Length: 607
Image 1 (cartoon, one colour):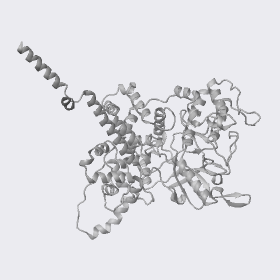
Image 2: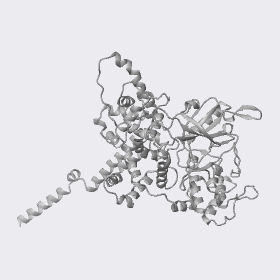
Image 3: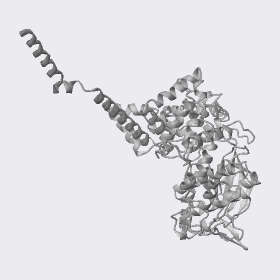
Image 4: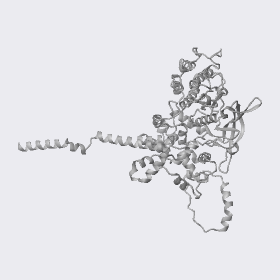
């Protein structure tokens, strides 16, 4: 009996000890442990996102400079068109000692031909030569240059891409991508099927939504200003000719007075008052004209459209009625039009093909590139062309489900997961199977997925833009294209003297936030373990301009030439040169040897 009582007291003591507060603190529950791990994961992801924002690119496009066309590196080959605001000419890039440009070579990833819009400073008025209105005062010139810079900042697959701008005493030159597919009137000569019309209008509205979000209105939407990028049947459309464009909030006295008034223009179009809804009226007119091959108002007097469109669906008719309203406030905005059922149904019916494995791998591995290579790829991506650009654009539009011209984290994750479920990914073997494991690994780790988004988002907008998406593929393509490498080099060479200086590296790569990271790492690496871990997932700790210069400057002349630039890109280690005694004969031969080296064409093969 006593033994049983003792046993019960022992069990009671053990029970009290197992639930005592001391035991609870030393042995946390599984729920608490998982919560702690989740908090650590969230914190790690936040550190990665913060480091990604601090490592943004200081400069993403070349500066506007003063130089003559003869100094530009282009030569005119023909006139494309001429209008009241100037002319557009096709130009070919000049061959130099490093790069040979062939306008008939379609195999390379960068086109040799560009389009150049020439905006003259003076124009004829009767028998007199007068200054163009946009150059007439300092205020108007300043407003013009702000507009030019803003247009270069538009980054959308359906908006004309501008490479660079410069000016001399006679003209302003805007160098743009060259399109060869003709305009809507050339390609669509008869009545267009409704599904095809919706496919076209969806691209135009998406481009306008992107511009309107940034406060820019086009003010001249008509078939002649909408081009096909190439003669291919599935070529994308591009909204061009932004001569009449303007900021919505530009003061009336600084706005362009000479606007083009066409059958597609909104009734309220006026240089004294701008609204994004004017562009949407033009979209409504364009939609009706493509369906019926005529304009909706026989009298020519704009009015609310309440009629029927023969052969069109009820959703299509509602779309047109929602845009052709005389009262601008009653029209759909571009963003609202993108969400209209007619365009959403058309988008579902004409989905681009799924991601290919190589594009998916390029996306997830881009985070492993260092900051210099990311910048090089971003600059070179602007010059992509041909079939490769077409494939990547299709992939971008496939991921951008809401057609806002950007890819957010949700769209990116959904696209990568959908790719892993595709038949192509499931049938992969060998190296391709290993690549799919890399994609799978990223999707299973939220921190790595955050690093992928941060690495691609070089402007820290929180979303992946069109050029940023192209940069992921360009980083791999540059291995086989000296032309893309040359375009990246030109972007770093801000003064155009043929070499990259330390000040130019600082101008392109460094920001105050980046300098703060470099200083913090140098102070104490032990106390910044979390930061270093995050930076490793973003391609490694950033380098200072001095460190980059020391690493790339092989001949020790304190500048980086194109040969050194190429060697850094392809990872070729330079042999250490041994010091030799001075010799008069070597000095005499040195100038000839250096001249021969400069005349050697550098290609990835020779490296």
